Structure formats: structure tokens, C-alpha cells
Amino acid sequence: MRPFRPIFPYLVAALVIAGVSIALVVTTASSGDGAGGAAPATTRAAPELSPTGRLAY
Image (cartoon, rainbow, N blue to C red; front, side):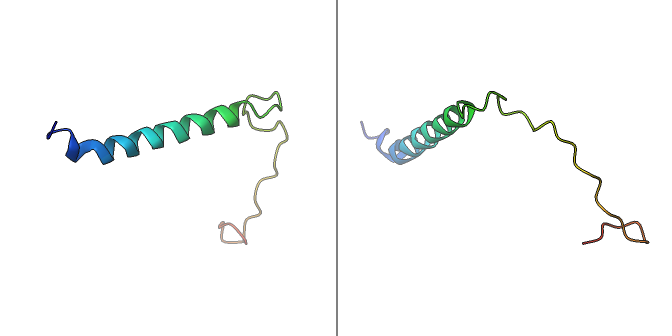
């Protein structure tokens, strides 16, 4: 079982990352708002531009 030992920490890390990402997707998808993660239907106004045509902050 010697060849398995060097990759064991990477395998554990991959399983942890996969598990956390699946849990995050499931909790996000089942947030209960009924929109299914879609963007809100409200329309935002275009950002104000400066006289030079750049965004004004």
C-alpha cells in the first residue's frame, strides 16, 4: 500500500472540496424564493457618464 500513501492527503482534500461545493450548491438552489437563482426582474439605470465618456464615481 506504499504507492497510495503519498496521494492520500490530496484525495482527502479533493473529497472535502467536492463535498463543500455540493453542499453550497444544494443550499443555494433550495433557498426557497422560487426564482431558482435567477436575477431579479427589476431594471437598473445605466451608470452616469462623465463628460469624457468614462464612468463617473
